[in-house]
Length: 530
Image (cartoon, rainbow, N blue to C red; front, side, top):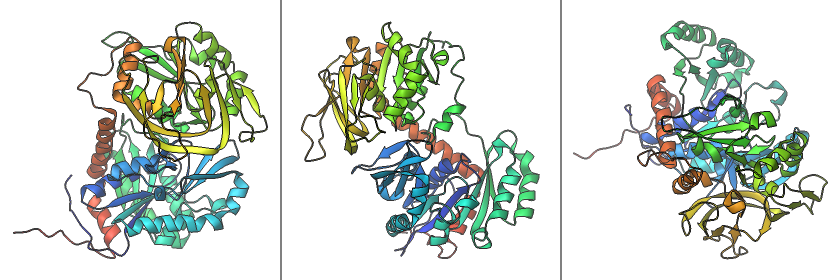
């Protein structure tokens, strides 16, 4: 894109910029990704950072360990590999008041919310050390906040919003979501509730998700600047069909009504894929590639009435296998899935969903509640035993046979694992080709299948992002995959990030933002020969 290009000369520490929002879902994560890409386009070394994230959608770094999915996406936008320093504290909810605490990529223990807040003194040095390391190796670090920066009851214990801004004296962008209404109260109210010290750090406002003629908000910009005494750097329009990974399950509420009647394409019928929306659903971005397939109708369902009679049922990953399996039984979905399995319906389980499809799950150490054993749905001849060690690694598998899909035997699929426990089965269809740990047996296998490959599961997250494998599966289901000239999953992601960054540059005064970030030490124009 246009605009100035800069390069820092041996900076002692990276410059910083922080993005906070007036509420959850204001657009902080995607705007942080857009800013990372805009800086990277100017030849700057840029990294994202979020001190603490709360999400069951996680990504695995190349050396193992997990971070929030949003920080991994932001790293991709910046053109760098995700690292553990980008999200040193990750909270993975397991219930209404308790979460597994992941520190520097590794799980520590499950804690109640009150216990967690008491640990702030132990966690704060971990947060600041991670940020310092990023600043030592980059030109710019773009920091994302969480929720609202003016949750006054948390002011003394938070370690993700203005406490981080104060620590590194970051200029702050405050983002308001006009789509949900009340953007003046959002932005001006947040400014008013900030302490004078924190308010002085806010250097720009952004109005996000505007639908319609942007000029209709010209007077709104004047009002915000007059009353807030902070410049409005841009009004961003609503950007649809980005197909970027979502962080929170609340995003599933925005999808099409699962009860809507199926539609047909010009090519004919669409295969109906129903993902069970478990209470503790995790890593549901596994299924994003299916959403972009023109001949697939992807739904997330929570009841038997919503489920209906789809062509495919998917049990996704979960942060609470025991609890969600009980929920399946309580709402009648367990029996309904078993009924559908006796028809021609395809049943798929990924990670926790795979464990549920087996005969039995053993919990000898009580990792998930008090029960030491629970019966699975019994659709796969597999038995899982939970262990304290958690597998978090990127993996590469060879497809052993054609029991699940045809034409893929001997081919490679890649993805990542995030799970406790091991599953024993005699019907494995994947073989690991890149053992990463000395204790890991060479040629370790994964997955199980039954009913001629109509029912299957595995631990491999990211499986559907493998374009050849996904295409083979769709052909098995009797439909045509996206045409060969269509973008691959990787290219689709990059295209969406470019669309996002292009919109940001078109509607935000990025030169002014550069001045805000670099004002204390102006970057030098690159020198050209000649």
